[in-house]
Image (cartoon, rainbow, N blue to C red; front, side):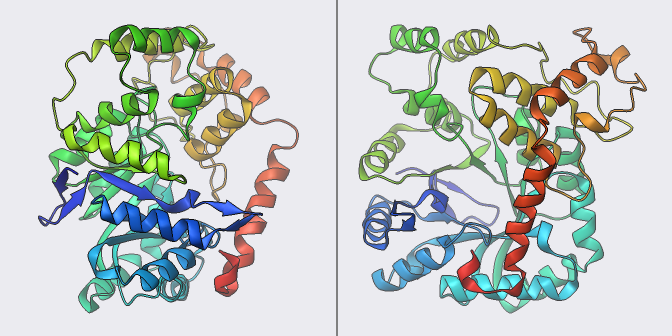
Length: 400
């Protein structure tokens, strides 16, 4: 196992355990299988375990397993504040205390403001007294380091990054689209500020393993048949010195063993042929409907629409399916937040179009995005999701 340092010199395993996909049996987390996986992960040298208040039953399962194994002090726990559910200052204490209770711990090593989609979401937390709250928790030792997870445009990411003295951050990043959300530019900006970057969705929830175009698979095999599609995704990330930890939602022993084995030779500069990834991206682009490069010259939009995010999600909906496209659209446009900034917010002012190097008719394309990614059931589905999440406001640990 290779390790990279956080902001304060702590050594973090380059492979982190994304706990959201703990194994389940009959719809419930299988504690026996989870215990086996966590024990094996620790034995393999993995020391970063990522969970969140919003992941149903996951904090409680991780806390139970770590207590049974007696391994709490050997690993780092990362968990997250459900920002969208915070309406009052006292909510910060409420949700945090529930996480501590579920995790059966007195402190959380890496704590994040969960799923910020724009600067307004962080400003909301500031107005609730989050900065003062964070300082109190850090002073007491209940929080060791503070960070944020992000889904939104590069412009909004940089605003949040530069507004506070963060200890680390968590972004979605993989080889399929270097300019999606914070992207490579955001990764490098954080690194230049000395802020470690944790990576989520390195394989797009498995889609870069199971749904690669045949031509892309063939290109990878011609280059090096010994590397699996999963290995390709992880090594591309570990090849970059700016990446600190890559999270993987491993729910089988075979996955864990394969991923852990890769880390022994995963270091910056370990890949000799990066051109193969551009070849594969070119295969992806053949299915793209909107040829947006994610340059962000159209930003900022007067209505704060994440235009590159809208177009990326639209393309993904054709490349990897409508459900995946809608999922990415919801996250990157903050559709689940009080102030969404998706395609339907366009007022057709046209200020974006003169700045587009690709001469994309942005207003017309946003109409196409809205028709495909905001179907008739879209708003009802978003309301249902919010209702589900807000049921947990009582703080009952069984509500995940």
